[in-house]
Amino acid sequence: MSVAKHRLKEPRFSNTELTVQALAKRRANAQLLCVPWRRFYRAYEEYPRWQAFALWSRSVMAAEGRPSSELLKALRVRCPGFVDDVASPREPELLAFQLLEWVHNQRFGYAKRQGWLDALTFYGIRHPRSRVVWEYWEHCETEWNKKMPTSVPTFDKWWRATLRWDICDKTSSLEAARVVNSYLDWEALGFWLRPLFRTGLVLPRHVTSEIECKFPSISKFEGSSSGENRQARSIMLRRVMKWGKDDCLSRANEAGWLDLLLEQVGLHPWHVRMQAYAKHFARERTRTPALPYPSFHQWERAAERFVKADSSLAPHKTLRR
Image 1 (cartoon, one colour):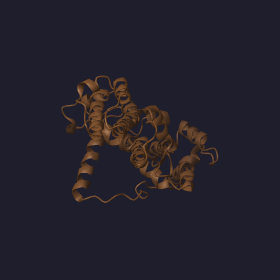
Image 2: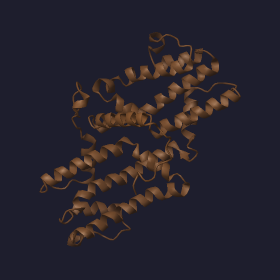
Image 3: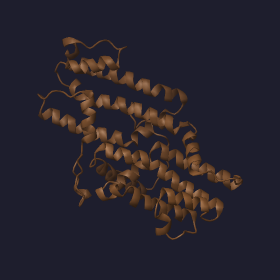
Image 4: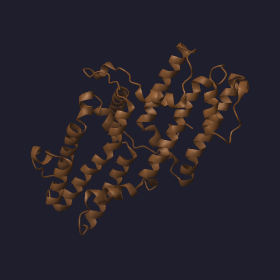
């Protein structure tokens, strides 16, 4: 099932705005492929909480009318030096902006120095948890404008409430992230198998063993029958992928958030990275078809380590693990 065919209805943008978005995405993707995945992933998973902290700080200041003692305490604990380095802003919006700028320079300064901060911010704000943070913040702004709470919640309490909030009134960010990750696992399996299934070679035993382990309800793939002809192998691949995708997508479809799921898959940096590595892997297999075919685990680890030099990132150097 194509991700592109199942998008949520997107707002209309001018040609200039679309061009800027396309350029930002191209630069983010170039940077994404120049840093090992695990290094990027750690920052990517951390980013939504900082986005939440900035928005919570903005809401607290708007509610209190000034940086209260509790807010200043939270800032000093989580952002050492921020209160001393930044002049006290009068507008909540300015506080949030300055705070995120501090986070980018201090907490994620290594990403900036290594040349992939644009990729982190581009995908960080598209993380399911970042998306729900913005939705919950907008909800709080609306409710607090109607009636102020008797006590402003601490950040930890506000963050926990955020994680329980549904994305687009469909599902929680935690559930969305879980299902997105399951979908990406099946997508990785397809990328791993596709070059092998398109050849006329008999499937290696370690490959058939992994397939049988992952798909016990599908007919066994044993002996030479697994490599009868290209058409049969293509059908086999489609059956394997359909089994996995149906398992991941059926629950989301029944719950009414299939479009949301597929949209988030398309916005996930691992989806982008796997596509790039799959093309590289297919080219390498064409050049050296006699090499032993990797296991699924080996393929995934290679995709994580994969880096690609990009002159547009100069003077930064390509990062290797």
